[in-house]
Structures are given as structure tokens and as C-alpha cells.
Length: 373
Image (tube, rainbow, N blue to C red):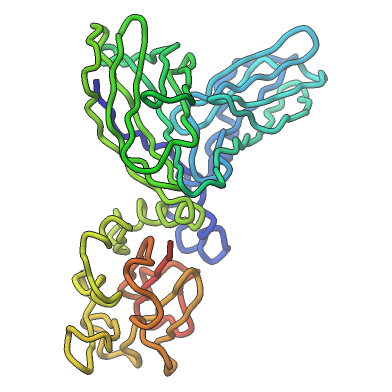
């Protein structure tokens, strides 16, 4: 049995929705970030002059994670249509009666979205996004979202019981093999997968508090009792970074060579004493230290930019421009935040690669964006 990455397509992150940012990313955004543009006019429903359709996407409450395998039910007097969302959370429901009062709801892992009441005209396509609240106020737990499939055929495994070893809170996979486990204790925990045709398997998974772990579980049809799972965790995502668009910028801008990103795990592995030292080895950056490289009296600048009127990098902390390259500052970055308080860092080496929301006061030098835990 194995667990492999699942990477659902996400909508436009909150930090990229300003007009200026949309202009900056126009080339990449078309067909990538807007599910509405992708679905419009492409329902895949057969032509029916007496019926309409519903297309949309199912997301978690942060609108950053598309939920696969969610059951979307649309009912009306005497009948109903049930469809399942795809890998990126998108769904299509066809043959909805024109003029009838329709009621739609999305259900996943024992949780449900709000109820949608609507009507369609003949030949009309109605668009809607369902939100399923999956957050937890308890900062000592996380959640696990996944899909169970047959290792040989790749077909979803319906009716598998997934839960924490020796505890309650079990979930049952649906027809698409999807499951959700909420309130999973943070830290190392064991997850069991049981099915009458596949036996019982278990694995140890590291769950981070306040974060989601997406998994694809492949199980062999030959029942082998208590054989450990082969686990590959896709990514541990901190909720506050999800809502600020950090991971979406990382996915698209890092691939294009427009920025350098450090996650909390990478920051912790560096073991740096000062924040400026965390980014010292990022390509293109350099430290200007008045009392030596091991001191805390350092500033970040960018190599090869001495011809500009400024040398210092603009620094943002949680969206606030705390150090501006064209103005004198009473504070050093190392005095404002320490490495153990940082959840993620973005480094943009020049104005051409810097997103519009981080252009700063001058926009002439590069930018360092810091997000705290």
C-alpha cells in the first residue's frame, strides 16, 4: 500500500485578487486560477431544450483547497441528481428540469455545505461554489484529506473504513474513494485503513496543528494484516499561509524563477540564530553587516544592484511594509522578528519579479516578505 501526492487545482489566492496583481499575472492566470472561466460553456451536458445544468466547484472554507470526491445532490419534487466532484473539486450536474424549484447541497466526510435554492431556464447553465467548513478552533489538531484506490487498477475503493488506531472518529470512503478525518491530534499518529477485500493496513503519519495533509492511499487487493503503509506526504500546509496565498505564489512563481520561497520546515532546518541569516544563501541576496557576518546588525540587499538609488531590500511582515528601501529605518530586521516565529518567507530579487501587492514604497529594490506563525 502506498500514499502519494494529491495536488488539487486551487482558485485565485486572496493575495492576488487586486487589479494590479491580476494585470501582473495575466499571462499565467488565464485558464489556471479562474474556475468560472474554465467551466463556462464547457459543461459537457448533452443538448436538451427542456433542461438546464449546474456547474461549479467544492472548496474548503478558505477557498484555497478544492475537495475531490464530494457528493453534490440536487433534488426537486419527486426526483434528484447526484454527482461527485473531480480531482480539483469541479463538478457538473446535467438534465435539471427548467422552471422547477431546485435544492442543492454538497456532502463530504459527514460535513455539509450550505443549502442552495435555485432555478434554471431551458438551456441555461447555473454556476455556484459550495463551501464545506473544515476548520477547527482547536490549535492542537489538524486534518487529513485523502482518497483510497486499488493499487493495481487505480479504481476508487468504496466502503473502506479509515480512522485513528485505537480511537474513534472513523470515516467511510464514498463511491470516489474519498475520506476526511478532522480533529486528528497533532504530531505522530497512526491511521488504519480497513476493507473486507483488502484486509487492514496501518501507517504512522506526522500531522501538524492547524494544517491539512492530502493523501492518496493505494492498497493491494490481497489482504495482508497490519502491513505498514508506504507513506509519502504531499505537503503540510499552514492555514494562515493558505489564506494569504503563499502556497499558490510558491507553486507558480518559483517554477517561473521569479521568486524564492522558504517554508517553516526549511527555516527550522537552517538553524539560524538571526532572521537575516536565514535568507543569506538565497541566490542574489547578500548581507551588509557593520559588526561582522555573525552579528545581528545586518541588512539584506541584492547583489549586482549597486547602480540603483537604494541598496536595502523592502521588508514586509504579515503584509505590513516595516522597512522601506528609500527611507531611513529605526529598526533592524533581526530586532523585529526571530526565525522561530516565522512560518514562511518570500524573496523577490527585483521590481520585475515582485508581485504588485509587495511593491513597497520605492519599488526600486527587491523585497523580502515574512509571514509569522
